[in-house]
Length: 533
Image 1 (spheres, rainbow, N blue to C red):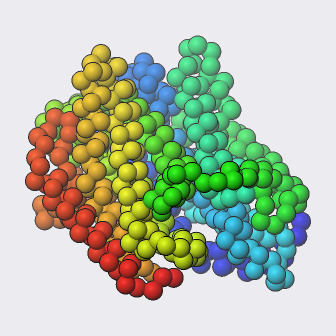
Image 2 (cartoon, rainbow, N blue to C red):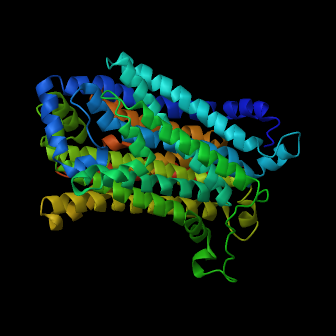
Image 3 (cartoon, rainbow, N blue to C red):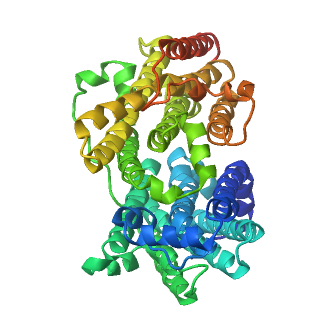
């Protein structure tokens, strides 16, 4: 293995990723620590409430599928049941994006070709990707364990939780390393790794929910299942950690073997040649943008559909999860803006779906800036295509795609909840409408990013994601923290109708739409006047 120069490249990679890594680690550790340590202590104060919850979980296959098996009745065991599977998924996603960023993405943009022209070994980029990802996971493990311990959970269990979480992250670092050798594009490599992650979640879910049918062995085929089977805060099985670390060693070995068998810039799977002539859809910039975004859009829509199904299934059990906790009932009612627990929960979830859809919209809008930096827009703008037409086409695709993912989320929630309540004909259209009503708010957030692309292009990504982060904080934590209505009004999602169960008013929808149009117009005007590149 030739990895000369890897040490210097590791320092460069850590410098490049310092903000992204800090954001990933902070969000994963704080959400798990704050909710799993401090939050559950407030909700389930007594042993009786925890025993009641445990009995409900063990008799509900839907909850077992979504969250896994519950091993014990302690606060720590409940925290591991509720958060460990999704913390492991978060670590897996972080690792996937990191490895692909430093391997296939850098190779695709030509950075590795420049690096390879210096005194750097052929395998150095892959070594760097694995080292940086391992450092990130180690820091995540330490911080997560520390936050859980500070929240009052046993230190040994907190350490086991952190190790189980990052074991899944490291496995998918190896999966992403293999995918980066197979695919010739960064998007394809990420797609392969995420598809494997989805399959692992499905195996774990079927194994946990189908134990009475002899399917529990399926959980042993999944790295997410391995994390759960460590059983933090219970009868901890440390030996299970040998499985993911053995898989990591095998995966890294396969990745290095594949890297030695392919050409620089090419994947093992060669792209198929396209048709000789373009279709009508490619006659304009909007059609081209849709063609380039269709895989991304399809992935988001599928994720929203699956997430909506999960929300709909959990809604039927929300009273079991809340139990007798008046604090949680009150918090959900504040976020959802409804008095009834079920309607309040659904309204709160639809608001979160809208916020997540805004993340999709921001990512599509910022694609304009990344295309500009990579000079992919120059051939297009050199043809009889104006900047306004190019920018407007991209914004139109962003808006239409956001509507599609919101409808997918509404369909998922409506199908699951409607079938469970034997009221599909009413719930399905109601929840599709509850999703679509979030479109003006999501569009307003994306329009801020569009304005930044046109007016302050270098700061467009920080501006877009910062605005989305502020909206997320205000929407999720603002009502629970009793923040002033002046602060809550910062988020456009505060003004979106609270559906289902609420009253639809045209005024906030029109105001949000007008604000989005004005910001988008400002961005297009700036794009028309400034230098490209």
